[in-house]
Image 1 (cartoon, rainbow, N blue to C red):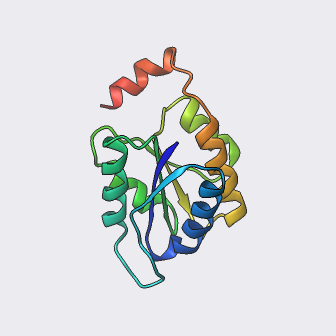
Image 2 (spheres, helix red, strand yellow):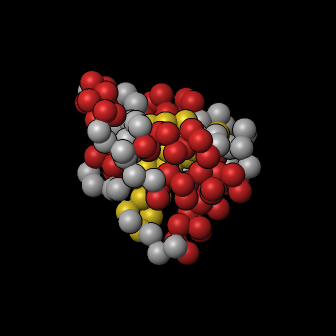
Length: 140
């Protein structure tokens, strides 16, 4: 699977752990940055990951302090459905019902271990389509 990933400075450490996990699972990872703890602006990375998803990456992963700002920036891109996820249930529903194509995580709110669990669930969960497809089409 081809996965684009990006974070701001607050999400950098979680991003590093997620990349290692994904590469160990033999996924192709496109890291758009940031590459340090130096302060940066999260919209830059949200837009880069969104672009990679639209260009053909299977999914995107975004991480900032809360997960909210970076998701809001990503969701400004037509065709992107970024979901802020903080537990198993919301992660499942973001894929099953909303066909999210980007998972957004808050590094200041969830542990790296929980973030990895959410990423794993996100990548394995299929969109249920059916009645949900009609609703997802209305997002456009």
